[in-house]
Image (tube, rainbow, N blue to C red):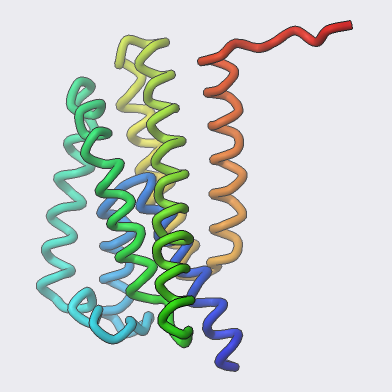
Length: 194
C-alpha cells in the first residue's frame, strides 16, 4: 500500500472508531484491542499496550459493565453525564492509536478535531435521542435505545476495521437523521409561511 493511501486509511479507521466511541465508550476500544491483539491492526508507537492480553481483558470487563449499566433506566441518564467527556477522550485515544504516517502537527490535529469531534457529534446525537426517549416514554424506552446504541457501536466498530469509509458515511447519515428528528421534537416543526 502506498504511504499516502495508508495514511488516509488510518485516518478513516481512526475517525470511524472515534465515532463508534460516541455510541459506547468501551466497545470500539475492545474491538481495536482485539484487532491489534490478533495482529489484524497495526498500532501507532506508544499505543502497543492496547494490543496486549491485559488490555483486552480490562476492556472486555469495562464493556460488559457499560452494557449492563445502560439497561437500568435511571442510571442511563446519569451515565450520559459521564459518557460525554469519556467518549471524547476514548475517541481521541482510538484515533491516536491508529493514525500513522503523518507529520506530528497534522496527526494531532486529526486526532483532536477528527477523533474528538466524531465522538462528540455521535455522543451528542445519542444524548438527544435519550432525551427524546425519556420525555416520550418516561424512561421506559431507554433500554431499547441502549440496545440500538450498542448495535451502533458494534456495527460501526466492525465497519471501521473492515470498511472505514463506509462507516463514516453511515455514521454521518445517522447523526443527521437524529439531529433533525430531535430538533423537530425539541423546537417544534415550523409551518411554512405562504
